[in-house]
Image (cartoon, rainbow, N blue to C red; front, side):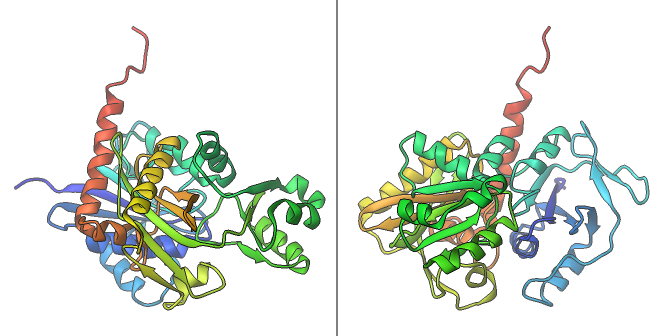
Amino acid sequence: MKRKMKVAIICGGKSVEHEISLQSAKNVIEAMDKDRYEILLIGLDREGRWHLKDVAEFEKEMKSAPLPYLSPGGDEVVFIPAGRGRLLNITTGELLQPVDVVFPILHGPFGEDGTIQGLLKIAEVPFVGAGVLSSALVMDKEVSKRLLKETGIPTSRFLSFTTEEKENIKFSTVANHLGLPLFVKPANLGSSVGMSKVKKEEDFAPALEKAFRYDNKILIEEYIEGREIECAVLGNEQPRASCPGEVIPRHEFYSYEAKYVDPQGAILEIPASLPQDTVEKIQYLAIQAFRTLYCEGMARVDFFLRGEEILINELNTIPGFTSISMYPKLWEASGLPYPQLIDELIQLSLARREKEKKLQTFIN
């Protein structure tokens, strides 16, 4: 009998997107072929400790609440440097059998920003998704927007400020530059956490306070009156794009509540009702943005469609895999079912690792 591939699912973490990560992990586990994969579940608690979790118990807990926290318990583990996928059980002192591949399903800081990707590279274990550089670039929305703009890819106008500049941010200056309404959000976060729509001056100071609560750098962006379109990209050297889908929010904007709390928070139209030439332009720009930011494996590319003008809003290198997430839904609508999507993501991670192993790491 052929040995099952051992896949470590890592979820939870220190980010404010902790609960979303758990829901994504639950859906990935449900979609995986249990005859092909042996699943090892590693849950990161709010303090960043790594725990081995029982998969069946985890799935049961996920059904108990819409957005549950990771439950306490489970032996603590850690990947060892140059261990080729070996985990050390800190609780028992046991060195566990090697993991073949890691699927990090960690949204936001400490998971999507290159930190865990660097750790996994040091541990010499293949992992799904973008590498260190791309993860860091895409996570920082200011840096990614500047790189997209530098290569001629259209994006919305924005200003960025750090904590040190906070006292010098003037509403009149920002409003004159970007117009009203405008959006204020943390530069390094996702799921619309910390985001505010500012329509008048009285909204501005509270919006700044809210955004700076989550990050030391914020982005202030122009409001785009248009349609919200998303496109999924899959691949390494030869990426391909899914059909585009449209998000039609029923809230003021596509907020955290609209995405994850209110089941009626948004309508997802997949595929989006668009002319074929517009579809092709969106797919082309999605792939160009993917390559510009050195992405690998997967990314979701978010667009605004203002009349015939197509603007990239941002990319996401570990998109949501919840039951209502666009990334898997877009691929399913494009002819790639959820289980096959997981298979391909794992194979892409193994192919990258084989390519990296051919590189010389010392001078003869």
